[in-house]
Length: 557
Image 1 (cartoon, rainbow, N blue to C red):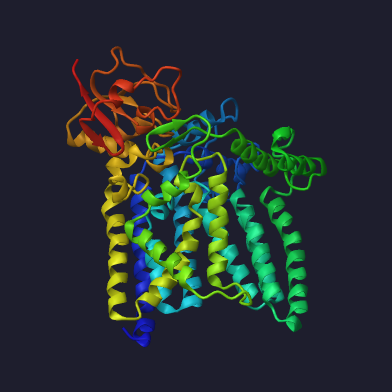
Image 2 (cartoon, rainbow, N blue to C red; image 1 turned 180 degrees about the vertical axis):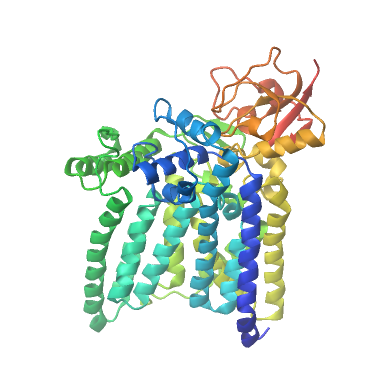
């Protein structure tokens, strides 16, 4: 295909790929039940937006949550009194005080738009860096990436954070190509929005610093002084806009809510991070809720979290290679091949210390720092923590594939890679993309042997359980459920075995009789329900069936 032909077809292909991604995201929006933190983010976002109350759910900044609440503002929703357990309050807001069939789709819709914007941004950036073919390849990789499809319709901060980081990196790359005041304002504002969306975005600060140091050191002596002046202007803009945007996100109010305080004194064991947070609290540098979120994340990373990896549970922290395993089994074989080719081509590329950083460095350095920050921490509970790495890899991989497609043999290889990337994503659609695992892991049905939690079972599959019950003419089950949703809204007649949920359970008279359905996280004892391993006897026998991610056992009465 000639360059002119590609250009003439480009708008059609771009529209087609975005439409395909929108369709897959919309299917997930309606076919997945509530997942993980969604119930809290929906309720908290509504509270943030309409009541300007930031005292609830301070773990992440409110920007992405308020974006999800924008469509809800027109629905006239009722809020229960904000008392007691915040998770129970959130559950009542979504499930009992309002109609969840209205609330959930409208709250998820902005995330779908955000995900499409991320794909469009990757097309534009890759096209500018490598040309038309590379831009289209980047869009194809993004449109059928299982993890972007899995989380691109959920009310979380994962995809909004990835978009904000990618957009900040793109604006900084454009500024670095030709520093001027207009581009400087956009780059500083984009970075400010990124750190007001997700705390992970702070890894961009050392990444940009390293890239700029490299640019200055490799610049000709006559241009170095001008580059330093431009950098000084950019730093001044960032120093002004970052706190301004964060304060604006919190309504220019230090207290999270009038008369309330949420900040805990930073623990001494947090070291320099604790001292910085304490200084911020003392001087009111940033809103209290934002600083409390930073303290919570630092404390969480220090204390750790129960981790399930390769069939083993660690109550504090898993191995440092957790995210390497997650990357290897949660991506399509086509995407793994494209990433491997990209890294191999970089290893073979000639090196020069006098060359300023190109687009590859602008992509891989933030990706590497994001991945290393996740691996070094003690919150190893889901591949979504490295979701922001994927846009950067797509950018680099697409450029490599475009170069590979320069000859006939290379085009065949690219076609094979795209086939191994697109077909698994389409095949997975009926089962939902959250539990996707590639052939290395034995597919979705084998994923529980390697990973759990939000990699597999995030509470999202109650609709598929309801469908399984209809198809198999099962009237009632004994259900061990882990998640934020309510089985009754899907017509699931059930008695409740011990689980982790927010609705009021109704225990069976005789446990483990009839049809028994168990969430993988509970079956694997990921979170340890008390001292007793309640589901050990089931774990050591093969299931009779699978209903979505659920394990189904037919027990004799």
